[in-house]
Image (cartoon, rainbow, N blue to C red; front, side, top):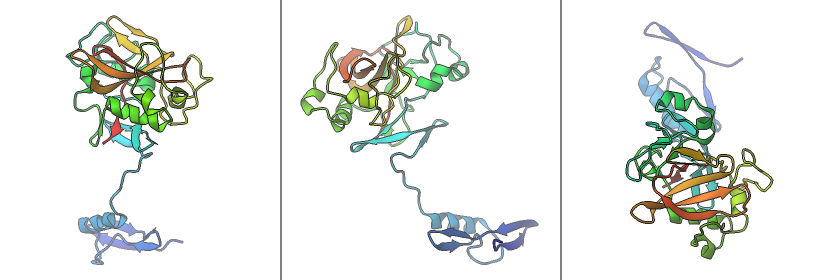
Length: 261
């Protein structure tokens, strides 16, 4: 039977169980005054120490717990951003005004969009102005720059020379795309290993009027612009082993990830 102390304080009965933490016994009645007060509880919390985030822990943001993964020296979200302050149909487009989309949803009601299976699976598609708005990433995190994407790719074995190259149709590297794609959910999953833990999914993209290439392609923005109306992104394809790096008009709607500061 566990030993416990019964204390009557302000007409309430507290059963004070001792806590054993790393061989140290802690009691709720820290100051032994016969009553459990706020100072006792604060003292107990201080005994546990300050929680320190370790990559691989979940990060809570906007009511959702994101999974994280260490890739090289970086810590990344291992799922797409889900921040959705508003939602627009695919017909809404701008390379200067933020727009937020949920795949195959053409309404404007956030609650309805949040309830869709595509939101649950793929998160949100953002035009580039939207990823530059505050709120998409939690404090201490940010949308990766093009250089930070290169750092990820190099950590997975891509050569620095290939990492800085871009292509209109070709894919850079050897098997970095295979390492980044989730092992299920694509048109074909035979090449996918997800050995990086990035867990890339084929959310496709949105361009004025329609949603395109779901199940086949996944696109992710960087925070680096390449001109007044275009920005750098990454693309994964189920049929390619590598990773595409190219620019798109900032009005396109792509997925987003956060990386730790």
